[in-house]
Length: 297
Image (tube, rainbow, N blue to C red; front, side, top):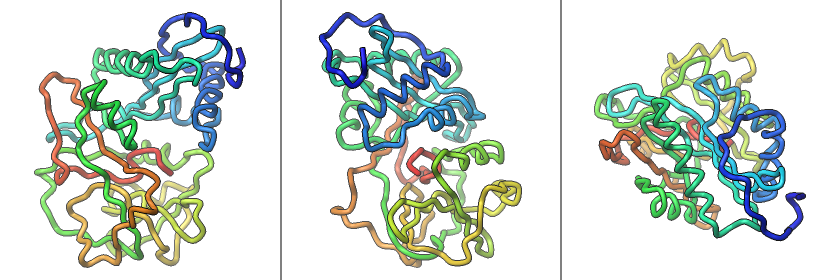
């Protein structure tokens, strides 16, 4: 069956844990591109995202029919300081069901298998950034917490930070040099850095002329930036989109405003699911989360 043909429905072969082989990556890319035609899903991109992550390979499940993948769900391993302890989690990334096979509950089935398998392997939580439609599915079908929408700002210059003790934070993504080096090798993306006196800002193009995305801005000692040779330096600070959660940002002293709603393609909602059985939930004001922490650019 060609993925571009709407054939008659046959009983799928069953749910299979993804082995992330070359042929499976190729067939996954075909399905994702069919469902999301304006996205940049390629074999190279999925190979980078699913197989090269130094934290671990993707947790993914597929449903096959007649030698083709007709439903797919994947999340990638991450680490974060959660309620004071460094824990392993998942970032929900990709889901797709072929148009001829929708309405069968495959999203819930595949995601549930993914989380159950991950929990056995020591994963304690799942996070994601969901649009308005998928947020409802994650909450209703998979019992995620809708924590809050991400803030979206546009402006110039560095984002001023308050001097606040981070000990009370509930969620801080974990980055080291190895993980960051992998992250900035994202296919088709190019990153630049802008150095201030006490920090670095990491930028990516938004494909909108003259507008860049602020991926991360923070402590100069986060990693050895000089070792990340693929980065180039900005000599100026560009017009910038900032998306994330960070109560330490002092917006009253920064040259940023809220992006008008009419320019937002969809709400970006931060969602969370605790896999420990402790029923932990997150408070928006106690989260650090930047664009670099999910795969937007």
